[in-house]
Image 1 (cartoon, rainbow, N blue to C red):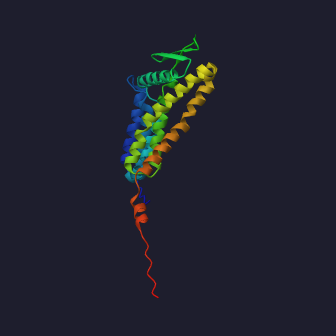
Image 2: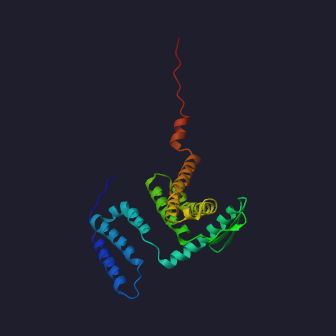
Image 3: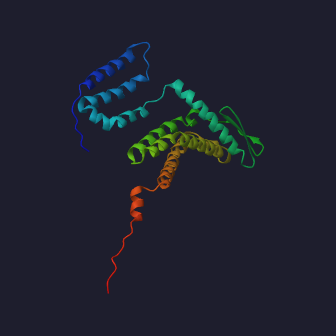
Length: 243
């Protein structure tokens, strides 16, 4: 890689601008806290532009933008996005629980009422904000961007990998809530809380890796590269021997 980095003083202007913007969001009554960490990330980009110019920005913009995944969403947007995911997880988990003989489950919003062998289990199973899948979604978005960036693939495969993060996150969250429901009914409510709950969430990461790996393998198997095809079509003919 021939990188000819040279300073660009336009970066100094952007750096000063983002520093002023950061302090404005601190002292101003109308300041928006979510913009503070974003302005820090933008300031890092300005420093890169100042020290290395546009050629360095071209090679480092994605790692800089990747830092956005470390910034929590504002609470009102977080709640607005998590509620539909909680409703979906509760409905699907209820349907799957009802497939098991002896379990009768009904859903009301994010609460799942369960009757097991004629006895109502108390309290109802609550699909809380932690089980909404939003954290998984943000983690899987970061994972999808990293995989699309680090692995050499055609552009269309990178786009599909990135777009698959949302359905994979939703699917993994449904699996998580459903497994939690079966543990709640068949084992003990004790194992659906605290560290057990957190371990189950961490266990969704290998599952997501498996989905990503299968999708990557499937896309790679759809088409044969031209170089491989050409190599396979080469026929070596030996010169006939003369007697």
